[in-house]
Structure formats: C-alpha cells, structure tokens
Image: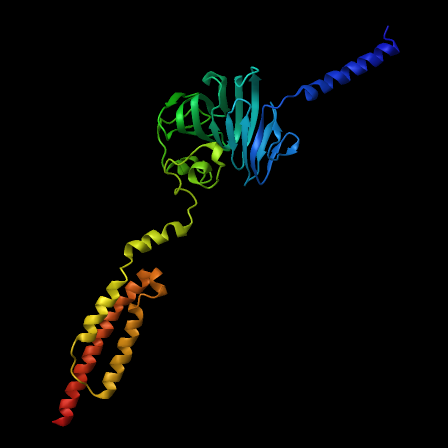
Length: 323
C-alpha cells in the first residue's frame, strides 16, 4: 500500500534527482573574449562566464566568442556560428580523456591543449576532423560543406568519400555531405568562391580579429575577401607617381629657350596660356592623383604646339603688313 509518508518521500526523491544534474554540473571551461552577442544555454555570455557540457553556443551575425577549456584547449567561434561541446570527460588532472565538439555551422579556430591527440574529435555534417597536436581553422556552411585549413601540427579529415591528411601549414581540404572530397592542397584565394561565401574563414582573411591567445593566421588570405579600395589604390598610385624633381626639370628648359619677339597681343596670350600649364606641373597637394594630372600633361603638349603656330602666324602677318 502506498502510504502518505511514502508519497512524500517519493516526491522528495524526485526533486533531489531532478536537482542533482544542476547542482553537480561542473564547468568545462570559460569565455575569455566576447564581442557583440554570444549566447549559451542560459542566455548572453560575458567574459569569465563558465561553459558546460552539452551547452550550445551561438554567435550573432557579427558575434565572436573565444573559450578556453580546462585542459588548455582554445576554441574561437566566429560570426553566425552554432556549436555544442558534446562530450567532455575530465580525468582529474590538467588533461581530458575525451573532448568532442559538434559544429553545426559557422567558422571556428581550434588550438589543442594538454591532452592526448586521440582525446579530441570534431564532428561536422561532412565528416570528422581528427586532431594531432594542432591549430587549424574550419568552416561549416549552411549546406554542411566543410573546409579545414591547417595552421600548425597535423590533422586528418574523414568523410563518406575517404580520408585526407593535412601535414603542412596552410594545407586545405573541402568536403561535401554527399561524400565529395577534394585532395589536400595549399589554400588560396579561390577558397571563397569554392565555398560560395566571402565571409568564410574570417580569421584568415582578417575580417574578424582574434585576441592574441588564439594563435596566428594568414596563409595569404588577408587581402582576399572584402578588401577596402584604399588598400589597393595607393599601391597603384605609387607605381605611377614621378619624383617631385621631374616637373621642375621639364619646366626649366622651356623657360630658357630663346623665342622671337612677337607683337604684344600674341605674347600676352602665350604667357597666360603657359602659366596655365605651369599650374598643372606644380607638385602640389594634388600629387596624390598623379594619373589624372599625367593625362592632362599629355593634352598640354598639343596646346603648346598650337601656341607656336600662333607666334609664326603673327610673324607672317607682321611681315605682310610691313611689306
């Protein structure tokens, strides 16, 4: 018979069991850098907030979260991402027996901690990344397409289409959920076209900046995506820019050339016209835009030539008058 006392004890036991996971929950790491909006199971995350096993971490379209786990492993979660720390088995020291990350979408940087290589596993829709003492970036697209770019150490990627080894810095592999898998090759600027997203791999392209603790990037992608025009134009201008002394050298011979004395009207017209050209030859503040000025210099020569014809016409007419 189920007495009232037993009912009370059963209810209390249920409450204790329900509360036990929360009370016994132990953090597996913490946030060390948060930008804009990064959320966990209980809402927005801030610096030094703890993270827990099975907690889903999401970032906004401009969000960035950097986390350090108890064994020293670092995970950076870039904009528009979703990831779960699926399995974390701590062995009581500074290492873990198992750390599994399940990346649903977005862009990430991984830097291994103090645990054995076999303890780490990263799951993506297209396959599994195996870690061998490694730092790498990886991207998971909305359709599950996954790209891995090695920065240090070595890694493997295994999917339905087989496995690939990444052993050299900037090695890259791209995998599709349907099993299609590229050969390992050095990453280049074509990766953004392959992935169909110029915002992919933002830590390598420089579109998102990590704290110094997340390792170095690069691989020649820093100028590949969403480059401000100012980064290109000055280099082009510098190539075409003459030294400041050249205009002065061109002006001086023109001033020293002896010219026949025309009548006052034509002499006055030529001085005004020549003065106008001198204005374009001055290396003033407009020197930053040398190409347009260079184009005008080319057009100035025909004007000067026409001016010489003006002098000869004036001389001929003067001779005719005197005759």
